[in-house]
Length: 381
Image (cartoon, rainbow, N blue to C red):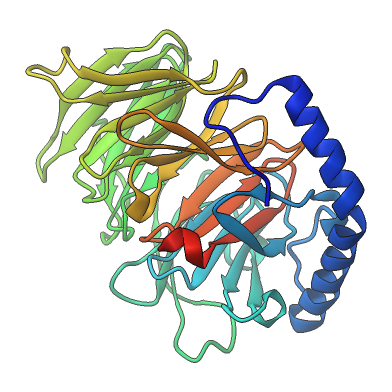
């Protein structure tokens, strides 16, 4: 098991570790992926196919162990149920649904729902979110004539989730965010490139539409609800970061800040601290101040030389997990201490998701594929 430093590695150390890993583990990794691929395809005839698992390097991890490798098209969006038993992998053409097995990867059940079978629009699936109080999944499409679909399944699981309803949603682009549990959806549209209108609307109505709740300058790049679903953080390409508190009647700005670089990813900590990742590899943590325009900066860290591509809550360990364009997953606690948890050589991490405890971690890879990792038992203690 490799030892990681809390600070960025030197080129010499990183090159040496990667060469040693490739030399010692190459044949074992190839054999493992071949065994998993054969078992998975025999189980399900999985249509989530784009990259051969042999092309996805094994993840080097300190606190987690690799549990499952799923192949899929590029740019996947990931959702994990709170209990860590189910994973949804959304690409434009397909929705992959995985029932994880704690015993062995080959015992996991995988199913595919094709966008063309449920949606007649130009574009396909965009986002997914698990319901909190029932075995349900919310899935959106992104195009004119978009919809929010409600899907459900029963136990024991015998097949993919079944469609139980849908809500027309007008025009949704690919940048959307569900509140935890799927009760609300935030979406946006661009006004001639100068500013972006952001709407927040409940998903349990006849038609999803709302007048513009607020606007930010430039193009929007990140949307994220807090755990309670009553605050929404938005970040733009010009560095504008705003947090809105949502009531039934309106949305009020409770934090507004201008960062030095474009905001590429957002997440809330357990105390509603907002963690913003930038295009230049910084993570900035902010809390609400006395006024909306005087937030308190908790820390400002340079964590990578490339873009921050994903941020999610870390579960019981506190803080957040940060994915980078260099294939690293970093844990950053509420004081700003940095620890490298996972390294996937030659990969760009596209999305991150964990269960409520943080013991199940799913990593989406921009060029295709998703890795499911389970926390080591000794690390969980």
